[in-house]
Image (cartoon, rainbow, N blue to C red):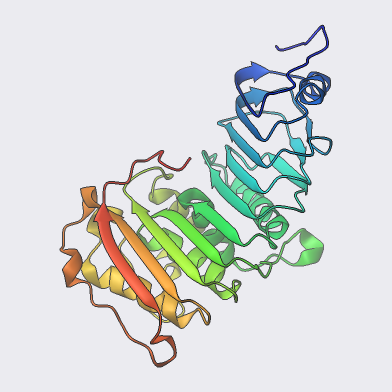
Length: 310
Protein backbone atom coordinates (compact mmCIF):
# COMPACT_ATOMS: atom_id res chain seq x y z
CA UNK A 1 0.00 0.00 0.00
CA UNK A 2 1.24 3.47 -0.85
CA UNK A 3 1.11 5.73 2.22
CA UNK A 4 3.10 8.96 1.70
CA UNK A 5 4.50 9.95 5.12
CA UNK A 6 6.05 13.16 3.88
CA UNK A 7 5.05 16.06 1.71
CA UNK A 8 5.25 15.27 -2.00
CA UNK A 9 6.63 17.96 -4.27
CA UNK A 10 6.80 16.81 -7.86
CA UNK A 11 6.36 20.31 -9.23
CA UNK A 12 7.42 19.51 -12.81
CA UNK A 13 5.71 16.13 -13.20
CA UNK A 14 3.26 16.07 -16.11
CA UNK A 15 2.62 12.33 -16.47
CA UNK A 16 2.08 9.84 -13.64
CA UNK A 17 1.40 6.09 -13.83
CA UNK A 18 0.57 3.94 -10.80
CA UNK A 19 0.38 0.18 -11.33
CA UNK A 20 -0.62 -2.71 -9.06
CA UNK A 21 -0.89 -0.75 -5.85
CA UNK A 22 -3.19 -0.20 -2.90
CA UNK A 23 -3.73 3.46 -2.24
CA UNK A 24 -6.17 5.22 0.04
CA UNK A 25 -8.21 8.29 -0.82
CA UNK A 26 -6.12 10.41 1.55
CA UNK A 27 -2.82 9.18 0.12
CA UNK A 28 -4.01 9.90 -3.41
CA UNK A 29 -4.98 13.42 -2.39
CA UNK A 30 -1.44 13.97 -1.06
CA UNK A 31 0.11 12.75 -4.29
CA UNK A 32 -2.14 14.94 -6.44
CA UNK A 33 -1.53 18.04 -4.33
CA UNK A 34 2.20 17.58 -4.91
CA UNK A 35 1.77 17.44 -8.71
CA UNK A 36 0.40 20.90 -9.64
CA UNK A 37 1.11 20.62 -13.38
CA UNK A 38 0.00 16.99 -13.83
CA UNK A 39 -1.62 16.48 -17.25
CA UNK A 40 -1.87 12.70 -17.63
CA UNK A 41 -2.79 10.15 -14.93
CA UNK A 42 -2.81 6.37 -15.45
CA UNK A 43 -4.04 3.93 -12.83
CA UNK A 44 -3.61 0.20 -13.54
CA UNK A 45 -4.91 -2.55 -11.24
CA UNK A 46 -5.42 -0.51 -8.11
CA UNK A 47 -7.75 -0.85 -5.15
CA UNK A 48 -8.65 0.71 -1.76
CA UNK A 49 -9.39 4.05 -3.42
CA UNK A 50 -13.07 4.84 -2.90
CA UNK A 51 -13.08 8.38 -4.29
CA UNK A 52 -10.76 9.69 -7.01
CA UNK A 53 -11.16 13.44 -6.61
CA UNK A 54 -9.37 15.32 -9.37
CA UNK A 55 -11.25 18.57 -8.95
CA UNK A 56 -8.11 20.40 -7.72
CA UNK A 57 -5.93 19.08 -10.56
CA UNK A 58 -6.67 22.01 -12.83
CA UNK A 59 -4.27 21.00 -15.63
CA UNK A 60 -5.14 17.31 -15.73
CA UNK A 61 -6.54 16.45 -19.15
CA UNK A 62 -6.23 12.65 -19.54
CA UNK A 63 -7.28 9.89 -17.16
CA UNK A 64 -6.73 6.21 -17.97
CA UNK A 65 -7.90 3.45 -15.66
CA UNK A 66 -7.56 -0.32 -16.04
CA UNK A 67 -8.81 -2.72 -13.39
CA UNK A 68 -9.54 -6.40 -13.93
CA UNK A 69 -11.39 -6.87 -10.66
CA UNK A 70 -11.88 -4.92 -7.46
CA UNK A 71 -14.43 -5.13 -4.63
CA UNK A 72 -14.24 -1.36 -4.24
CA UNK A 73 -17.01 0.77 -5.77
CA UNK A 74 -15.32 4.05 -6.55
CA UNK A 75 -16.42 7.51 -7.56
CA UNK A 76 -14.59 9.66 -10.08
CA UNK A 77 -14.77 13.44 -9.73
CA UNK A 78 -12.85 14.86 -12.68
CA UNK A 79 -14.37 18.11 -13.94
CA UNK A 80 -11.28 19.20 -15.91
CA UNK A 81 -10.32 16.09 -17.88
CA UNK A 82 -10.89 16.02 -21.63
CA UNK A 83 -10.05 12.36 -22.33
CA UNK A 84 -11.16 9.35 -20.27
CA UNK A 85 -10.29 5.69 -20.83
CA UNK A 86 -11.95 3.04 -18.64
CA UNK A 87 -11.11 -0.64 -18.96
CA UNK A 88 -13.21 -1.83 -16.05
CA UNK A 89 -14.01 -5.34 -14.88
CA UNK A 90 -17.55 -4.65 -13.70
CA UNK A 91 -18.32 -0.99 -14.41
CA UNK A 92 -17.34 -0.43 -10.80
CA UNK A 93 -16.74 3.30 -11.30
CA UNK A 94 -19.38 5.97 -10.93
CA UNK A 95 -18.74 9.12 -12.94
CA UNK A 96 -19.78 11.94 -10.62
CA UNK A 97 -18.44 14.89 -12.61
CA UNK A 98 -16.82 14.67 -16.05
CA UNK A 99 -18.35 17.88 -17.36
CA UNK A 100 -15.39 18.86 -19.60
CA UNK A 101 -15.07 15.46 -21.25
CA UNK A 102 -14.60 15.49 -25.04
CA UNK A 103 -13.38 11.93 -25.65
CA UNK A 104 -14.05 8.64 -23.86
CA UNK A 105 -13.08 4.98 -24.33
CA UNK A 106 -15.07 2.36 -22.42
CA UNK A 107 -14.85 -1.41 -22.18
CA UNK A 108 -15.73 -4.16 -19.70
CA UNK A 109 -12.93 -6.66 -19.16
CA UNK A 110 -14.94 -9.40 -17.47
CA UNK A 111 -18.58 -10.31 -16.92
CA UNK A 112 -19.65 -12.82 -14.25
CA UNK A 113 -21.84 -15.66 -15.48
CA UNK A 114 -24.67 -14.76 -13.11
CA UNK A 115 -28.06 -13.71 -14.47
CA UNK A 116 -28.93 -11.21 -11.74
CA UNK A 117 -25.53 -9.59 -12.06
CA UNK A 118 -25.76 -9.37 -15.85
CA UNK A 119 -29.12 -7.63 -15.48
CA UNK A 120 -27.55 -5.24 -12.96
CA UNK A 121 -24.68 -4.51 -15.37
CA UNK A 122 -27.11 -3.57 -18.14
CA UNK A 123 -28.61 -0.82 -15.97
CA UNK A 124 -25.12 0.21 -14.86
CA UNK A 125 -23.97 0.44 -18.47
CA UNK A 126 -26.89 2.65 -19.44
CA UNK A 127 -26.18 4.95 -16.49
CA UNK A 128 -22.58 5.20 -17.66
CA UNK A 129 -23.79 5.96 -21.17
CA UNK A 130 -25.96 8.75 -19.81
CA UNK A 131 -22.93 10.35 -18.15
CA UNK A 132 -21.21 10.37 -21.56
CA UNK A 133 -24.14 11.85 -23.46
CA UNK A 134 -22.33 15.16 -24.15
CA UNK A 135 -19.08 13.58 -25.35
CA UNK A 136 -18.43 14.06 -29.07
CA UNK A 137 -15.83 11.30 -29.56
CA UNK A 138 -16.61 7.84 -28.16
CA UNK A 139 -14.99 4.40 -28.39
CA UNK A 140 -16.76 1.30 -27.07
CA UNK A 141 -15.43 -2.23 -26.75
CA UNK A 142 -17.25 -5.38 -27.81
CA UNK A 143 -18.20 -6.52 -24.30
CA UNK A 144 -19.88 -3.18 -23.59
CA UNK A 145 -21.74 -3.29 -26.93
CA UNK A 146 -22.88 -6.85 -26.20
CA UNK A 147 -24.25 -5.63 -22.87
CA UNK A 148 -26.19 -2.90 -24.71
CA UNK A 149 -27.49 -5.56 -27.12
CA UNK A 150 -28.93 -7.53 -24.21
CA UNK A 151 -30.55 -4.39 -22.80
CA UNK A 152 -32.07 -3.64 -26.22
CA UNK A 153 -33.41 -7.17 -26.72
CA UNK A 154 -34.86 -7.40 -23.22
CA UNK A 155 -36.53 -4.02 -23.54
CA UNK A 156 -36.30 -1.28 -20.98
CA UNK A 157 -37.20 -2.16 -17.42
CA UNK A 158 -39.79 0.34 -16.12
CA UNK A 159 -38.13 3.37 -14.53
CA UNK A 160 -39.92 2.83 -11.21
CA UNK A 161 -38.34 -0.64 -11.08
CA UNK A 162 -34.82 0.71 -11.47
CA UNK A 163 -34.71 0.72 -15.26
CA UNK A 164 -32.62 3.23 -17.19
CA UNK A 165 -33.56 4.45 -20.69
CA UNK A 166 -31.09 4.83 -23.53
CA UNK A 167 -29.98 8.49 -23.57
CA UNK A 168 -29.66 10.67 -26.66
CA UNK A 169 -25.95 11.09 -27.42
CA UNK A 170 -24.17 14.09 -28.94
CA UNK A 171 -21.37 11.94 -30.34
CA UNK A 172 -19.97 12.97 -33.72
CA UNK A 173 -17.19 10.37 -34.04
CA UNK A 174 -17.91 6.82 -32.86
CA UNK A 175 -15.50 3.87 -32.86
CA UNK A 176 -16.60 0.29 -32.15
CA UNK A 177 -14.03 -2.37 -31.22
CA UNK A 178 -16.05 -5.53 -31.73
CA UNK A 179 -16.31 -9.05 -32.98
CA UNK A 180 -18.34 -8.91 -36.18
CA UNK A 181 -21.15 -11.28 -35.21
CA UNK A 182 -24.83 -11.30 -34.28
CA UNK A 183 -24.34 -10.57 -30.57
CA UNK A 184 -23.41 -6.92 -31.09
CA UNK A 185 -25.87 -5.99 -33.85
CA UNK A 186 -28.84 -4.91 -31.64
CA UNK A 187 -26.52 -2.73 -29.55
CA UNK A 188 -24.99 -1.11 -32.64
CA UNK A 189 -28.42 -0.46 -34.13
CA UNK A 190 -29.63 1.25 -30.96
CA UNK A 191 -26.42 3.29 -30.61
CA UNK A 192 -26.91 4.64 -34.13
CA UNK A 193 -30.51 5.55 -33.42
CA UNK A 194 -29.60 7.55 -30.31
CA UNK A 195 -26.72 9.37 -32.07
CA UNK A 196 -28.49 11.83 -34.40
CA UNK A 197 -25.36 14.00 -34.91
CA UNK A 198 -23.02 11.14 -35.86
CA UNK A 199 -20.67 12.11 -38.70
CA UNK A 200 -17.92 9.46 -38.62
CA UNK A 201 -18.21 5.78 -37.71
CA UNK A 202 -15.23 3.42 -37.42
CA UNK A 203 -15.77 -0.32 -36.93
CA UNK A 204 -12.72 -2.35 -35.95
CA UNK A 205 -13.69 -5.99 -36.37
CA UNK A 206 -11.48 -8.12 -34.15
CA UNK A 207 -11.16 -11.86 -33.69
CA UNK A 208 -10.82 -11.85 -29.91
CA UNK A 209 -10.98 -9.63 -26.83
CA UNK A 210 -14.60 -10.35 -26.01
CA UNK A 211 -16.59 -12.69 -23.78
CA UNK A 212 -17.54 -16.02 -25.44
CA UNK A 213 -20.32 -15.89 -28.04
CA UNK A 214 -22.48 -18.37 -26.09
CA UNK A 215 -22.62 -16.04 -23.10
CA UNK A 216 -25.38 -13.76 -24.47
CA UNK A 217 -27.46 -16.63 -25.85
CA UNK A 218 -27.39 -18.55 -22.58
CA UNK A 219 -28.47 -15.47 -20.68
CA UNK A 220 -31.42 -14.77 -22.98
CA UNK A 221 -32.53 -18.42 -22.82
CA UNK A 222 -32.64 -18.15 -19.05
CA UNK A 223 -34.87 -15.07 -19.43
CA UNK A 224 -37.37 -17.01 -21.58
CA UNK A 225 -36.43 -15.56 -24.99
CA UNK A 226 -36.49 -17.43 -28.29
CA UNK A 227 -32.80 -17.00 -29.03
CA UNK A 228 -33.12 -17.82 -32.74
CA UNK A 229 -35.24 -14.68 -33.21
CA UNK A 230 -33.32 -12.31 -30.97
CA UNK A 231 -30.41 -11.41 -33.18
CA UNK A 232 -32.17 -10.04 -36.24
CA UNK A 233 -31.99 -6.33 -36.83
CA UNK A 234 -35.23 -4.42 -37.14
CA UNK A 235 -34.59 -4.42 -40.90
CA UNK A 236 -34.75 -8.22 -40.87
CA UNK A 237 -31.07 -8.88 -41.61
CA UNK A 238 -29.58 -11.95 -39.95
CA UNK A 239 -25.94 -12.25 -38.94
CA UNK A 240 -23.19 -14.80 -38.47
CA UNK A 241 -23.07 -16.53 -35.10
CA UNK A 242 -19.29 -16.64 -34.89
CA UNK A 243 -16.81 -14.10 -36.20
CA UNK A 244 -14.97 -16.89 -38.07
CA UNK A 245 -18.13 -17.32 -40.20
CA UNK A 246 -18.10 -13.71 -41.36
CA UNK A 247 -18.94 -13.40 -45.06
CA UNK A 248 -18.94 -10.55 -47.53
CA UNK A 249 -22.74 -10.27 -47.37
CA UNK A 250 -22.62 -9.75 -43.60
CA UNK A 251 -20.32 -6.76 -44.05
CA UNK A 252 -22.67 -5.42 -46.73
CA UNK A 253 -25.59 -5.82 -44.31
CA UNK A 254 -23.70 -3.92 -41.62
CA UNK A 255 -23.04 -1.03 -43.98
CA UNK A 256 -26.69 -1.01 -45.02
CA UNK A 257 -27.85 -1.04 -41.40
CA UNK A 258 -25.60 1.94 -40.64
CA UNK A 259 -26.81 3.92 -43.65
CA UNK A 260 -30.45 3.28 -42.74
CA UNK A 261 -29.99 4.45 -39.17
CA UNK A 262 -27.92 7.62 -39.64
CA UNK A 263 -28.79 11.00 -41.09
CA UNK A 264 -25.64 13.13 -40.86
CA UNK A 265 -23.04 10.42 -41.46
CA UNK A 266 -20.39 11.40 -44.00
CA UNK A 267 -17.77 8.67 -43.48
CA UNK A 268 -17.77 5.03 -42.43
CA UNK A 269 -14.55 3.02 -42.01
CA UNK A 270 -14.58 -0.76 -41.53
CA UNK A 271 -11.27 -2.36 -40.51
CA UNK A 272 -11.42 -6.16 -40.50
CA UNK A 273 -8.90 -8.37 -38.76
CA UNK A 274 -7.18 -10.28 -41.55
CA UNK A 275 -6.83 -13.35 -39.32
CA UNK A 276 -10.45 -14.39 -39.78
CA UNK A 277 -11.27 -13.12 -43.24
CA UNK A 278 -12.30 -15.95 -45.57
CA UNK A 279 -13.31 -13.67 -48.40
CA UNK A 280 -11.78 -10.87 -50.42
CA UNK A 281 -12.54 -7.37 -49.30
CA UNK A 282 -13.31 -6.58 -52.95
CA UNK A 283 -16.28 -8.99 -52.78
CA UNK A 284 -18.17 -6.73 -50.37
CA UNK A 285 -20.95 -4.89 -52.18
CA UNK A 286 -21.45 -1.38 -50.86
CA UNK A 287 -25.18 -0.64 -50.84
CA UNK A 288 -26.37 2.75 -51.98
CA UNK A 289 -29.40 4.39 -50.48
CA UNK A 290 -31.20 7.48 -51.76
CA UNK A 291 -30.52 9.52 -48.64
CA UNK A 292 -26.88 8.47 -48.21
CA UNK A 293 -25.31 9.13 -51.60
CA UNK A 294 -22.58 11.35 -50.15
CA UNK A 295 -21.37 8.93 -47.48
CA UNK A 296 -17.79 7.74 -47.98
CA UNK A 297 -17.41 4.04 -47.10
CA UNK A 298 -13.88 2.68 -46.65
CA UNK A 299 -13.24 -1.05 -46.23
CA UNK A 300 -9.85 -2.48 -45.32
CA UNK A 301 -8.32 -5.59 -43.82
CA UNK A 302 -5.43 -5.36 -41.38
CA UNK A 303 -4.02 -7.16 -38.35
CA UNK A 304 -5.76 -5.71 -35.32
CA UNK A 305 -3.99 -6.48 -32.07
CA UNK A 306 -6.28 -7.55 -29.23
CA UNK A 307 -4.97 -4.92 -26.81
CA UNK A 308 -4.16 -2.26 -29.38
CA UNK A 309 -6.53 0.32 -27.91
CA UNK A 310 -7.07 -0.81 -24.36
